[in-house]
Structure formats: C-alpha cells, structure tokens
Length: 196
Image 1: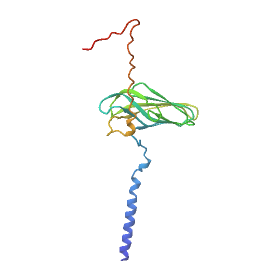
Image 2: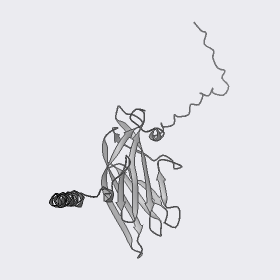
Image 3: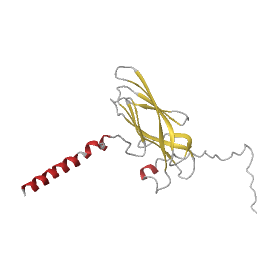
Image 4: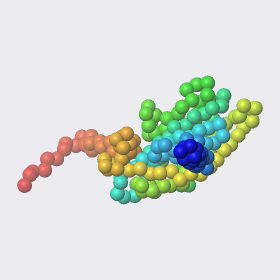
C-alpha cells in the first residue's frame, strides 16, 4: 500500500512539473505590443503617432477625399513637426507642442478640425502613408525620423460596418458656391414673361 501511495505522489509531481513547464516555452502575450484599435501606431523617435486611420464618406465606391484621424504625442522639451503624406499626395504639416504643454495632439477628431486629404481611397483597403517627424532631442541636436506604413481606410456611411464614433468623422462635403441673384442693369426694368 505504501508503494502505491509513493508511486501516485511521484506521478502527480511529475505531471505537475511537466504541465507547469508548458508555459515556459509559450510566448507571454502581454509583452507583445499591438494596435488595439482600428488604426496603426507609428513610433518616430521622441514622437509617437497613435491610431492613424483614414475615414471616407462612402462604403461602396472610390472616394477622392478622406479625413486623416490620429493622435500624436511629442515627448521632447521643444515643439516638433509631424509631416504626413498620403500615397504621394500633398504633405500635411502638424505642429506638436513640447511635452511641457498639453502634449497630446488630436488630428481630425475631437475638438480638432477635420484634416481632409485627397487621393484615391476605397473603404476596407489600406494606403501607404509616410510619417516624418522633425524635432530637437535632449542634447539639442535636430533629429528627423521617417517611415512608411499601410494605413486602413474606413467608410462612414454603412451603420452595420462602422463604429458609431467614426460616423461623424467622414469628410464634410465641400461648401456649395454661394448663388447671387442676377442684377438688372441700371435704368432697365425687369421684363415679365407671361405664363402659358
């Protein structure tokens, strides 16, 4: 009986050690960084771009403009500049205040105005976006970091496929030109056209 108890204890110990060792070779998921939202994260030295994405106003066809949405943080002690270029288009310049001020800059959402960029955008795809940061490091040296990432394009018109939060971020339609009534030349009376 004693041998049986010792064998059972040895088996339990061996199984316990073997099963707890499984986690030794498994990667720890909490140490892996990833973009927890729909956008992409970009690190440019002392400048961090978070949740960068493009919002278009259609889900079914190609759009020619999109709202650039991102949050940026400058951790340096002086102002920095972030330049964002969407697929070879015109660059968008964003000034990032120093870390001594409010260092989170919202672009295209929240209290910030829309940042409309032009190009060819199809909801559900990605587009190459170049991010370039220029800043002064802690030693006073000018630094420039640049990288290109694929940024997702989300449509804002299909309520079944878009988060409610994004539906208000679609680029605003361009303002219609103001219509002014035609003026009658001086000295002439308007002519009334009979109906019928």
